[in-house]
Image (tube, rainbow, N blue to C red; front, side):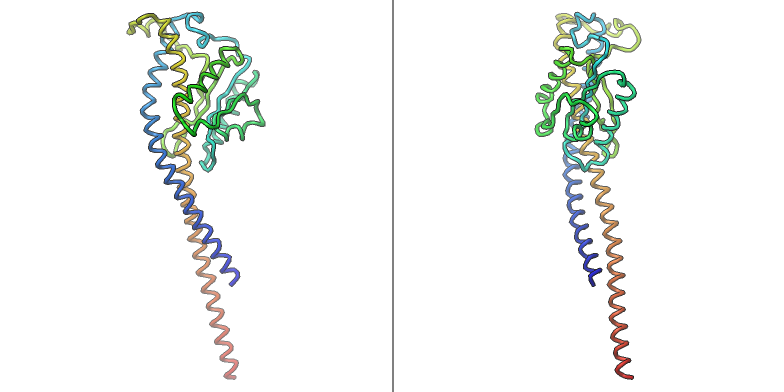
Length: 288
């Protein structure tokens, strides 16, 4: 009977776990819908703004385009790793860790690399391998453009002051609830248009008051929007990953519960059979 009691305790424990994982799945599903709508609506704007900025910057020299367009020799690189503050979201955070290590090994093995983490898990997983230049773990408490813009300005200052010669952002791009794609994007300096004549690209634009004034106003806004889009993408990916992970955890708990119920019923039936055999054996002994 002690064995039966142990099995009953395990079944009760698994049922409690199922309730928790099921509740977490529903919470993440609700948050995912809002986060998905936000990033889906923002992507076209961010993409067009970045395209316009590249087109404008390509027609200006480095002095006129500002310090953010200046291409210089790379000796120090800052990698911005965007992760989550909490776990229980499958391979969401580990995929960023692997991508950071892969990027540094393949592209920046010969230069000094610093790490700027957005999300607690990134610092926890990578602090031993890199020098942490900064952390922003509270951004998810109030994820607004203004709060992200402050972080972007801090990164822009690090580049403008010459502390780092290049800044990359690594984050999970949201595709659907089950799929998140690690992305590596160059944040600074602004990437020039690859191939073609930049003046031809800009032939459809009429600039007023002037290219220079437009670029000076557009560059900071575009960079802040790029970072905001990346964090929004990561935020939606986190909830998608957590919802999927909790769904799988709930299914696994159900399978384990069913197996334990079957084991419990077999053990209970065996115990009853043994008791019956003992009663029958005792009755026969009395008759004899």
